[in-house]
Length: 61
Image (cartoon, rainbow, N blue to C red; front, top):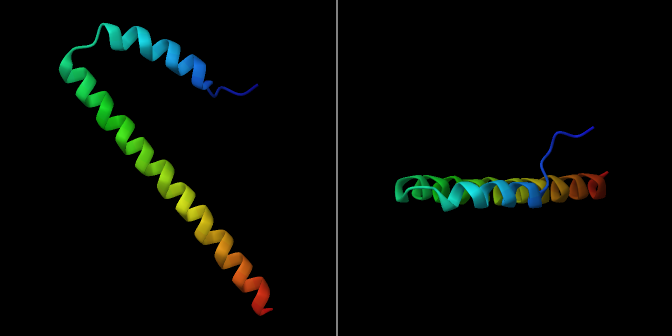
């Protein structure tokens, strides 16, 4: 069984926390989300680079 949370589970638990959060907590949460997006984008770019490298290596063979 996977221990990964679904997007809906995350949204439901975050909603409860956000309603009671201070401005400082919300600023921290926003920074986490922004960095998470950067990591996700970096991962996508890395996957594209690997795919392109693999494709070019196969074509050279």
